[in-house]
Length: 370
Ligand SMILES: O=P(O)(O)OC[C@H]1O[C@H](O[C@H]2O[C@H](CO)[C@@H](O)[C@H](O)[C@H]2O)[C@H](O)[C@@H](O)[C@@H]1O
Image (cartoon, rainbow, N blue to C red; front, side, top):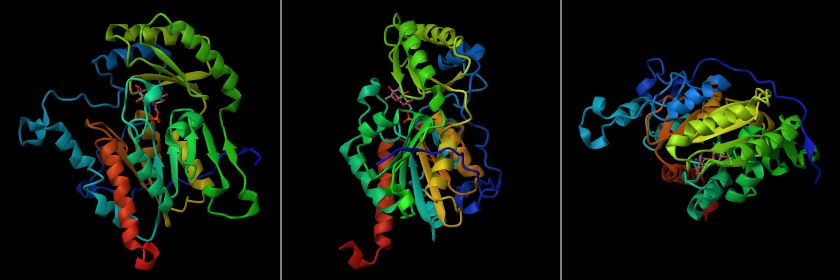
């Protein structure tokens, strides 16, 4: 099977309005209140300030709403219960399941799933972010009915190692490494019967390797710092670093990046992400996948993207702006988001996937199910 690297970027139309059937019932008659967030690219000057933000002084560019000191049992009032108030604008996808399904009537659902924090719980050691066998079974089942892609910041090989399902399509390195196989395509023509790789940042590979080596060297002295090579991007983890050293990590990354003007920084969950300056992200990857898989007709396809991180906001935004699908944010805290719905944790993601399968099975004629 030969690898074929696609050359061209898809040209996609961008309708501007959002169909009311996709919007949570609480917001159909007014402007959606969660409309300003996207992944934040950080100038190097701002990096240390951002890490200050992570330490507790929230910066204006942060997409996270400062969590309240009140717990959910503090009282019945929404003012005292920020999560409950937030649910009014970003409702639970489980509670809104019927509404989501109603918007999928007559359409094919296409699923896009982030990995860390969505299919696997966040853990201290990135090498041990395993998904449960139950979650794997849920993803396998759902993929029997709906085209399903994993869109991750991890390298494509690494995320495949975790998921281990050949029937899915994989986009690694925040969408900068996409593999399509003939099984992914709707078309069965001979031309499609090969594996296709799309790697829009391939020319940056030597630079990323060099940056990875420099970042490993620079952070060697920081206990707990961990640099992960994600092929077309690099993650500098500070989850296991003493809080008082977080600024040092940021400063060291900043210093290294002075030698790499063609690389930029984004932030994730206790991670600094170094990636090429190209205009490509998870949102662009979703557009590319929809087009490549011939799922880009909003009249016949409802894409659903589930993710937990700032980088997933680009995908939520694309679906919102393309007027064709919905994002579901996985979060236990209120956050500004472009997603329409929310789920609290990977366990609820699994429940949602199982519900999709049950719904689809109920639609099948009895003799097909047996
Ligand atoms: O796009 P994703 O699949 O969500 O990948 C984003 C990053 O996820 C991983 O880091 C996060 O999860 C780790 C394991 O739970 C956790 O230790 C870390 O603090 C989180 O940031 C992954 O290791 C990164 O390379 C990905 O970029």
